[in-house]
Amino acid sequence: MSMIDPKDVVVIGGGFAGLSAAVALAEKGFRVAVLEGKPSLGGRAYSFQDPDTGDFVDNGQHVLMGCYTATLDFLRRIGSADNLVFHQDLEIEMLAGPGNSATLRTAPLPGPLHMSAALMRYRHLSVAERIQVVRGGLRLLAMRRRDRRALEKMTVTALMESLGQSANACRAFWFPLSIATLNDEPRLSSAALLAEVLKRAFFSRRRDSAFVYSRVGLSDLYCTGARAIIENAGGVVSTRAIVDSLDRGEDGSVACARLRDGRRLGAANFISAVPPQSLTRMLPAEDGADPYFSRLAELGDSPIICVHVWFDREITRSAFVGFIGATTQWMFNKRRIFERHGERHPGYLSFVISGARRLVDSSNDALLDLVLADLCAMIPAARDAKVVKALVLKEKRATMAPDLRSHQLRPGTVSPLKNLFLAGDWVQTGLPATIESAVISGMAAASAVAARSTSLQAQ
Image 1 (cartoon, rainbow, N blue to C red):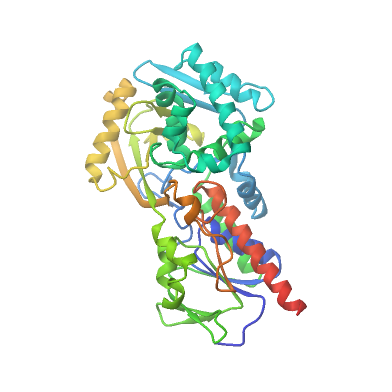
Image 2: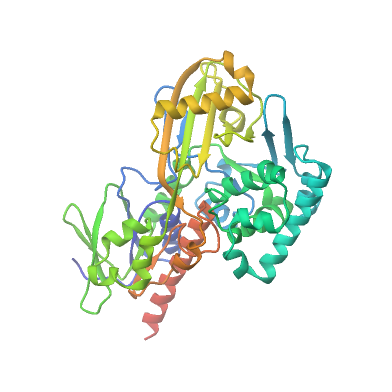
């Protein structure tokens, strides 16, 4: 290893957390080496081009929102803002069976009145239930302000009971919202995390609830631009660079990252932006026993299944549909979202099942059959369509489990090793494991590295 420059930083992990940290440091004059173990950048949020259709396929359907201020700022800074499409008014069609449709559509009013108006027009609920849901939302926001600790001890299911929400209100509104944003079952998920989502995304400014879609695949959205900035600043981005261990120096700090191919890469500071199980595997044995690190093994995770299906015809003109009472929870009409209608395969739909612990080990054929059965039950026109192609993608450890223990188990950015900092959607950000949480954590890690560097230079 050569002499260590105080401006040298190693970032392990090339997803949203690692790349946002690396870009922030590159902009501050640091020389960054990003090490990604997979063949391409993107971590758990990547895309690839399907060879048969030419479509860019995301490994999961990732939707941004207007409240994702850190993410949107990151995308602007790397020159990717033009790839985004903003749907200023939230509009979600919810199907409870053939012809039984209702739409959650915000009104052109200042927030949070825009969302209250949407709820008051939501026809899957009775008038009394609509009032009940609005009141429940206001009470939940008041609890968030006054007693967040109490919410951290309650599951979403228990919260709904305490708020007096009906079974139908839970089934048609609260639980689909909770599953979509927290990626787990309401009986397991933290009410505090749901409250944070509601406040930021639905009951703040009108523009915060806007859905934001990408015109391009996820990898093109953020990996390409981030890589260019890092390399133009003198940094290095390496894929297939698997880190086996972090070796300690004589002063107890991290001295180098030891790669599987035998290389050792030293730096003044290190950022780990990989999942917790990957981090603990890299740590020196004496550090793995530290309570800060040892509790990471207790963080649970929750899977997501995404099924991509190409039909020989268009099934629906709706862009985004939620299924009520079905195993399949969400359907994305990729042709409508991307405003591109293919001649060979005009019906490209993507289906999502979140919190899919009971299904993630099922065969791909069984999952495809399940999704198609749900689709035909909800939209009978699909029965006459022919499946041209299908892909089933499973992320068994898609997100951190948003359970009650996670509040105590999620670590902060600064670790006991003075030059090792953590980033990732699972680090304590106050948010569930989302893209926004990942970017916030990356920015926090970059700020911590910069602060340490400034402090050392002042000594």
